[in-house]
Amino acid sequence: MCLRDGPIWSGFLSVELKSQVNSFLKRAFKYDFCSRLYTIEVIAEDADIDLFRKMTKAYHCAHSVLPPVKSCTHNLRPKGHTYELPRCDTEMYKNSFVPRCLYWYV
Image 1 (cartoon, rainbow, N blue to C red):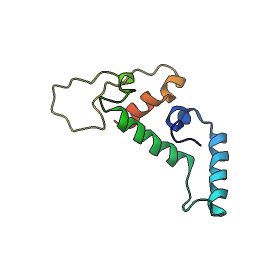
Image 2 (cartoon, rainbow, N blue to C red):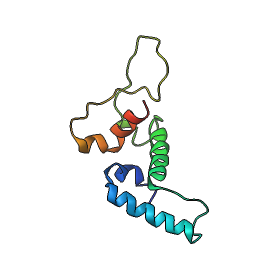
Image 3 (cartoon, helix red, strand yellow):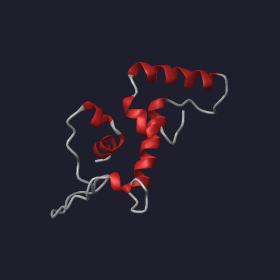
């Protein structure tokens, strides 16, 4: 699994494929190929968090993909990001990286 590309396709993995990858990771741990037991969900979540955090920096090449910053005149509690939440009409768009992170890190 390539961690660099993980955030892009991790939202489109089927339950069956996740199960197969988790079985592989379990065997890798069992035979001492890794020091701790990983799951595809944890690996994908860590990669998502890392890439989204980098994307929020103005100098990142993918920063322009993010929606505009939401202007809020009320003094509300802080949330995970300051971007407007996009409207998700299709399941495919909802599972893509940027909307998934925007709704996940609210």
